[in-house]
Amino acid sequence: MGEEVKLFRSWSSPFALRIVWALEIKGIEYEAVFEDLSNKSPLLLQYNPVHKKVPILVHNGRPIAESFVILEYIDETWKQVPLLPEDPYERAMARFWAKFCDDKVLTSIWSAFIKQGKEQEEALVAAAENLKFLEKEMKGKKFFGGERIGYVDIVLGWLANLVSIFEEIVGLKIVDEGKFPLLYSWMQDFAEAPIIRDNCPPRDKMIVKFQALLDAAIASSSSSSK
Amino acid sequence: MADEIILLDLWASMLGMRVRVALAEKGLKYEYREQDLRNKSPLLLEMNPVHKKIPVLIHNGKPICESLIIVQYIDEVWYNKSPLLPSDPYQRAQARFWADYTDKLYELGKQLWLAKGEEQETAKKGFMECLKLLEGELGDKPYFGGENFGFLDVALVSFSCWFFAYESFGNFSVEAECPKLVAWSKRCMEKESVSSSLEDPLKIHGFVIMMRKELGVE
Image (spheres, rainbow over the protein chains, first blue to last red):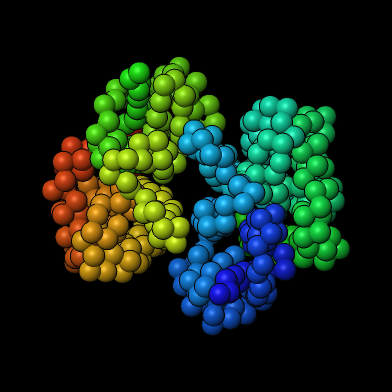
């Protein structure tokens, strides 16, 4: 009796990477299906007709989409190495911080990277305010999950490898070690964890990709007349 | 030892109503505290320092924020009465996926009564697309949860008391495009937990008129 687990992903999607990490941490065997997001496969469109995005987990032929939903499904289906805490209040807190990471932290840091001028300045201010909340939440723990990597760490994990790439490309400090010492050391600890380190897209390829995205954004903003 | 439950909320908020429905489904007694969002209370700022928004559930002194997170918390703590999420992980994943999807209605709905012209038309299209997809997901089931009222029903039903306001300002009819969804909302209103938690659509309409005046929308 075989379990068939497939993960539809792209080589660089940080959302799909969350699922890679979760599957690897739990030691679940899976087949990675790499999508070219500029040319989506019929299977992707069939499995995620609503959003047409990656990641999609297909377990024994049944698709699940949206990274938070997939993470909870994985945690409920494969009980080893739990990602979410057992206590309902702690679970609610983990869900709260995960949502905060995507709704606020990710959006403000992305804006700080992709925008220019005043919009960029405002995004940097917003990002710093959001990071302050995370810094406080670390409360001297090694990971948000405590002694080991958990749900919130996985959701925020993109910060550990993407932020330095953004900082290098735009020449700006987004996560300053002096201002956010706990977060900064979390970024090092997370990036160095074996499963994370062994499952990250190649840095040079990422730099090329995000430089190209930034160049396109600058070109389109300067070609629109104000 | 009795549980102390306090809900910080705004009477017209469909997000707050989700929590009221969940609390009622579980037969829980709680203290409702109406919030003035133009003059936020120290308690609200203390309990939700990150977003400073409602709803906030305070259970034995500890705050939980974000409506769907609160509903899941309620479902997990008081698990032996009227379970909202199914027990099967795949069914749970489907319920969570679609419940998250219903959150889109919040921003789109706002544009229906705040925006004008092309912006409003775009929002209307988006809003109806969402409702149609949700109606497809309902199919011929009595509730999104199947035979029983469940998590996705809780996530969506409070928007139904806002339909009249959306229709008036957006100039369209939900029933014309999504009759099954309207029938479903009427079925839900037959439940005490829903009818006692949702607000009168006329009052919501009045609330929107007031908000538009305040925000200078003519």
